[in-house]
Image 1 (tube, rainbow, N blue to C red):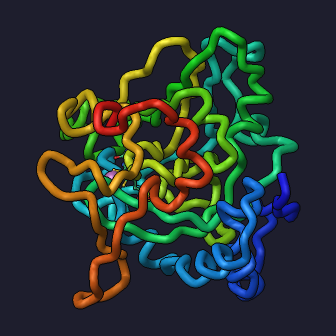
Image 2: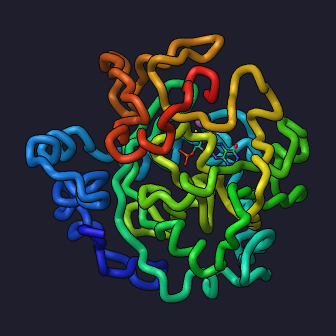
Length: 303
Ligand SMILES: Nc1nc2c(c(=O)[nH]1)N[C@H]1C(S)=C(S)[C@@H](COP(=O)(O)O)O[C@H]1N2
Ligand SMILES: [Mo]
């Protein structure tokens, strides 16, 4: 790994926001370039310019978290009810070290890195989010993935008494997601524990959520309580709900329309009412890094 931030950002060790912001340009230039060893100063300059992060206010005020309602402002209004105390994550399936881990134990010794990523919802809005997170591959290494494993399944907490969306049954809960093992192991795939150096807000998926920046936002499952290694493709919430509209792979792809709208462009949150739409990039701009994962696959079939 050519580029790893070695400072460890945790809830207890928060980088002052000013220092954080001063590093922004460097960070932006590193994302998706240094991490994978891609070189080229032209690309770096372009990335730095392009990846102006959204404000914390924007990131925490416009959300999808159906456990707390279907409106974009519902999670901010309702997610204070999420109980994140004494958080535990069950790691099971095809692993050498299964168990129910306290969050701190699961993450102990692992490096929290700063990653400024594009974030593209399947609904065609987008943001740029400065995450703090751990490469998911580091967590998998701790779990001890067995050779038979081919996929990773994820599950969100269900706290019916705290979650108005669960009470209303707006989706089949628990929210579940999955990745192929090579996608899960990819260095761009992180488990986020913070944003802007602060612990991740409840509405963004506290205390820990997946971030897979080349896929539509719904793959980035929030408030995770179970990680299961398996040899069968796991069910995923939106595919279960609308199989003709949402596939397992869900790679950002401007060439493959959603049945009800185009995916060729997107609305960047915070741009204002009259901001022009911006072109959506294949694999959300991470094509160089991830396209080879899908060699030989027809991405209009495996959407
Ligand atoms: N558990 C859970 N995870 C979820 C969702 C959800 O409803 N429940 N929504 C997904 C969708 S559609 C998107 S776009 C992102 C939104 O993440 P953000 O609110 O942090 O921007 O979370 C994803 N993860
Ligand atoms: Mo989404």
